[in-house]
Length: 386
Image (cartoon, rainbow, N blue to C red; front, side, top):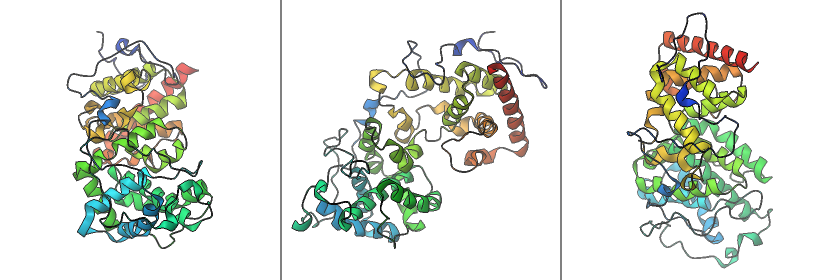
């Protein structure tokens, strides 16, 4: 029967292509397709325009005087916390990130005005501090790369951008990454991180993480950063490292794992989808959602999806791609995680891919079964390719 998963034999595994997946683009295909699919009626549709109607922290270009004078105060806040004025402190993270200094041009990365701004955006800056010191009141392009003040601004805006990870990352994970983040600064800018005394505290990071998730004004303040992140190509790899890879596909582990396996094996996406459906027939709804993402969003961007902001949809609307949410398809995620290991490929997740926290709820027997299915899929895909 069409749409029904083929039977999985105990000692043999053959891929029977599933008809409804036939119009899925090949994984390495980069051009547009003509097929359009609708999401499940229970899913929420996402378009780039959905970033345009969310009022949050007002993002704007700050004078160099303010960036420099607030810099040390900002870092000490991250170290020690600021419970008396926590909203203003958290807003500074977004404001400093918007004023990020591009290592390639040594100028501002983002424009003066946030293209996603609304009339109801909330301006934040420490009261009484918008007074410019004449010696620093000049365009950032007029400062030398060796100027300590310039290096300080680079460091604070870079740190702020890395803190955007806390919208989805745990404080412990961020702390474990800090040394690497600091080393990346030197590799990117060519000079040492100037604030040698700075070490973020777990307590302060926990407070930031909690407020980011609880208060919509900060979450909505992300919209301009994400919009411009997708629009600007310069230093994209660094921005992905600092925050992009951590915010995209939130709780959709199956998608990046699927892409890692497909690209490593250079296999037809239909074959991989069909193989997964054969081995995990109970995950059909999740696989259907994955196929919609491939066909409607990744490889067939309509005008209102061209910036690929769908990757951040679940930060703002948890019902987007709900069927592919990790806790709803843990066996599929486990099979894909084992496939990543078998392919000896890398993916966006740090450390052992099998340590994805959601997989801890699966028993040892279930994980062993998923590993066996991954081994059969891997062998069948390699044989078909050969």
